[in-house]
Length: 171
Image 1 (cartoon, rainbow, N blue to C red):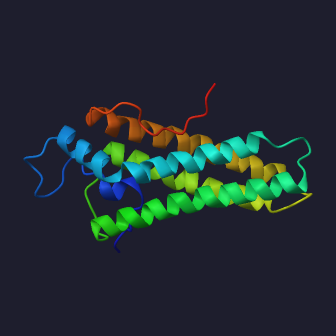
Image 2: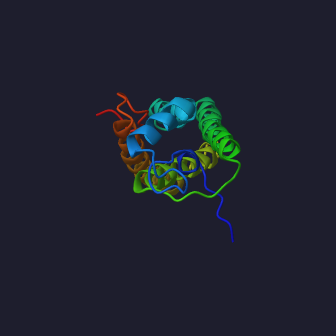
């Protein structure tokens, strides 16, 4: 069964690719960044916007705040899904051998996308948002942030580029 490789895993070709033995990981990372930086930034934008919308909720949240949160979370989810589609298209759907940085960024982006889908569900319960759904979002988002940030930071470091598009909440 062919695994459809989502997000960063499809485009990043840092280590072990057949036919790319002469390219260094640094060269491959730099090529990935040059070609796919916009998609990586979309992952960042989707996560950061949802966090900001969630932080603006009052206690208890108003119906208007929840509608705005649902809209923002859906837009973030869609940004990440569009990045995935563009990376799949760029790779022609081909399966690649993955480095640990690629796998980590891929897993993190998928967890962030899934967490945002859960946030849409949470916000869609106008007047009755469920604390359990919010707790699942927070746990999934925390895990996704950590994985994305670690993987994308490694890729940016190998490509000798500053300011990777991380999604960690500021302290």
